Each structure stands twice: as structure tokens, then as C-alpha cells.
Length: 341
Image: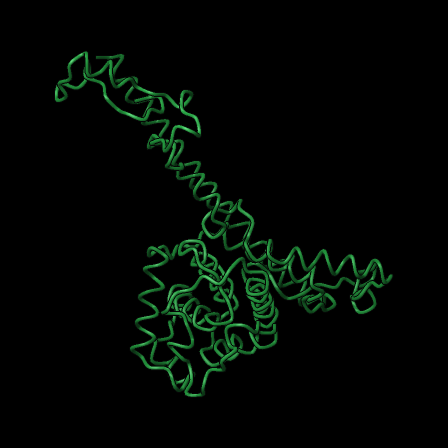
């Protein structure tokens, strides 16, 4: 069974198969080296068809921290075009308005990986979704996310709704309205983007003008329940979007979970990767985070947070050391017992 063969017959090893030698000679085993394109279809070995779990995870950025995020790859084309245009026109936008630190003043933003800035994070997430829609590969979708079949409002959906790409401002206003009304956190916005890209990867679909609102709504709904301590109920979203029903929300949530294969886990490494990739997207798009001079009060606060994290890591390392020592002692005790016996 080690080689790739087109016929898995081994009568000498399996007593269940009884073949005559004449039949085996008439049906010789053909290896992959003997098969050419002209001989027709060839049956792959199962080991050739299945990818190891580690390789499958590395292909999915929402599961593996090393894989590059989809939105950052989608935005590179536009970023390169902007840089080329600025170079040809001898323009450098953002340099005059951007603040730089000096010997006397340090400028720092109030966004960290543990406490991101809400407004800036929502803008970056909306920009990531915008590039997803603009640079999509095709228009693969599912009926449950089609706004024509499941409208979010009683207003008539335009006939060209599936053709015109939404602007960044429209996506930002839609997400901001949901986050402001439901009082969601910036961390929830990052997890929303993780679930969105995981859906696109698992379901092999695209986010496009006809489904982006319902996909974003489903991702926000799931992220708010998983991340926030005080989850927002489906009926609460019906108060925000007046014309949607609870039954529709429940059905969309169920389909979303099934398409995610109920994988709602977001490792800390994946969360941090999405946070820093969003910051990279903001820098490439001149969407800078608000900078403020570092005051004495803010410096003392950052120092206190740093000390708290340092003490926490010291406690974790000490507990890990105690566990390793206890295991070594256990191994030594067993070895001594074996020698004495």
C-alpha cells in the first residue's frame, strides 16, 4: 500500500481475496510511472488526494497564524497602483499631515492589540471588506445571503444591486450603525473579519454586492455572541434593522455556523495577525490612526500596564517551571523504583 497504484490487489497478504495466477498476470499492477496522459483516467492513491492537517490549515489564514490574510492580498493591487501613480505625479500624500516624534515630543496612538481604537478599527475592517468586494475572483454566492431573496428592509432592492460595488463609506456606515446600536467592542470587529474570511474559505464563495450586507451581519452576530461577555440577542438586531424578522436571523445564523463547520475558535496568534495586518492596510491606504502627544499620565499608565504584563508572564513561567520539575521528579522516582526492583 506504500506506492501509488491504480489497482490495490495483494492476494498474498489478504486471505479474503482469492485470485488465480492467470488472472493476476492478465491484470498487472500499473504504477504512476507507467501511466501517461493518453491512457485515460488514473485512480489516485488516497494519500495523494488528502492533504495533511498542517498544510490544510496553512492555506486558511483564519486558522493558521502564518498564512497571509486574504484582505491584505486583495488590497496589494490597488496599493501598488497608488504608489505608482504618486511616483509618476511626484506626489506624497499624507506626509504633510502625518505627525512624527521628536526629541521633545513622542506621538503615539491609543490603539493596542488588547484595546484597539473602535472607530479606526471599524474603518479598517470596512476597507478590508471593500477590497474583498472590489477584487473578488467571481460572484459565487448562496441564496441565504442574497439580499434580493432575503431583503433587510422593505425598500425595493434596485435591479442593478448585484452589479454596482458599494463604496467604502457605505460599508463603514453599515458596520458603524450596528456596532453603535449594539454597543460592540473593537475586538469584536476584528473577530468579525476573521469569521468573514473563514466563511469565504470554507464555503468557497465570494462576497459581492448582492450578499455583502447579510454576510457582514451574520459575522457580526456570531462574533458578538462568542467574544463579548454580554451577547446581543437576535431580537435586538431586529430592533436595529426594523424590517428583518427573528426567524430570518435564526436561519442565517444556523447556515453561517454550518458553513463554518461550527469552528468558532479564534486563537490569540490569529487575532494578533489580523490586528497588525489591519494596521498595515491602514498605513498603505493613508488611513492613519489618530496620534496624540505622550503625556505624563499616559506614560505612567503604559508603564503600569507593562509591569502588570511582565508580572503575569513571570507567574506563568514559574508555574511552567514547577510543572516541568514535578514531571522530572516523577520520572526520577519511577527510574529509582525500577532500579530497586
